[in-house]
Image 1: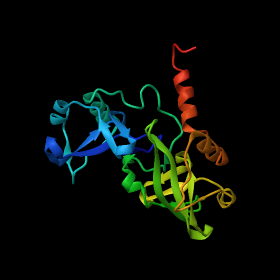
Image 2: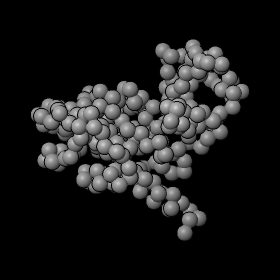
Image 3: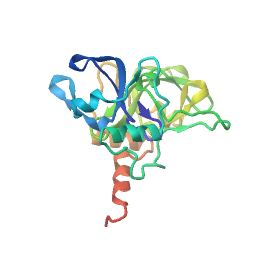
Length: 231
């Protein structure tokens, strides 16, 4: 589940079969509880068996109405500090459209829900769609969104990496607005659908800079360094 505010992974949704025998429910767990075993194509879950057995799951067809209060309790149960503490609030991330009073705007959306959503510009012209979200395993957030541009841009033969912050959710249109000038998009360096770039910080910094955005790990470092008590 992706935090729409800053692109963090709010939580991962796991099913537990195997020796736990809890295959009839799903469970929300902090991203930091997982560590990747690259060569085994596996994640290791660092949570005691007893904690898992007593965890409160949810029905596969009835997901919880997740908000930060609910998520704080979930993180606390597993012994983790919420990723937005201390003081992540206010950082630049995906924005949401203004809505009438009483209209609910989701805090989180599943990556599966976001994939395939259409992308439009401010004039509501169709640009393309979100093909994939690339996750930063170290930071636990969306490193970039992968877009295809069909529509009037006519660049459907390539994919393009776009900063998460460049997207704005339009709740009622089930779409994301891409706030990037048309000419910038036309001159952007895409990549072949069958030959994805080797992503590293240097490549990401160049891509973010092209679209006029500061890489997320830089403003995150600035936030940490500005905490009270730091020199």
